[in-house]
Length: 110
Length: 119
Image (cartoon, rainbow over all chains, first blue to last red; front, top):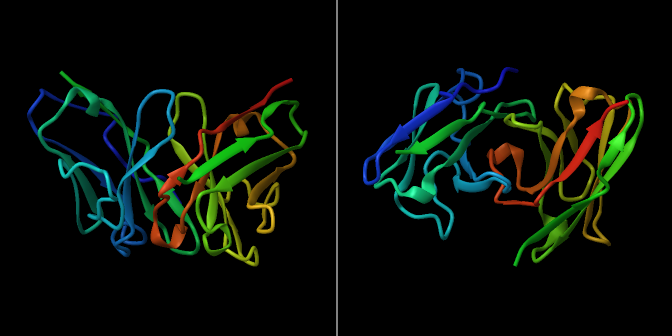
């Protein structure tokens, strides 16, 4: 199965909101509410931001939110802060004991 | 505090073998599924392999099926990845991650170990 599709880059000014999309197919994103999002700063391991479409683990600010419509999931970062500048990855259960990742989106805070 | 510490990486020639290990602590290891996820230099994340809590169920990405073997030792809280017939395209930072692929997420990750396949 192919990777999920994310825009390579996104940007916004401090305080603004930015939404990153993650497009799959009816066999993965469209079939399961098992979409997650990760934040990765340079040189660091990925950090879980959102699980199961819209659940935030303890400690993740509520500025981060997730949603899904059809075959596309989205991560919204509200009230952008300088420390939000990082790479963001989506993932989805792909069925048949397979997990798919998106290609990643580099978020720049202007 | 959950900790995942990978080891065993290094430089290996194409066609060679390498065994990665991940020492887990801070959670009940034998009730949690585990995975290996890799990231080629400057590239995105790729799920590699997963194993159920007892070790009876193993799953692999098509790119490594037949070449890599995931295993675990619950008596030592250790996850392993035996990598054979290595190729240049296997060069990556390999992460150990805690979670169920059937739930689509990993809640804890190690810091990663680098594997370089080159002659």
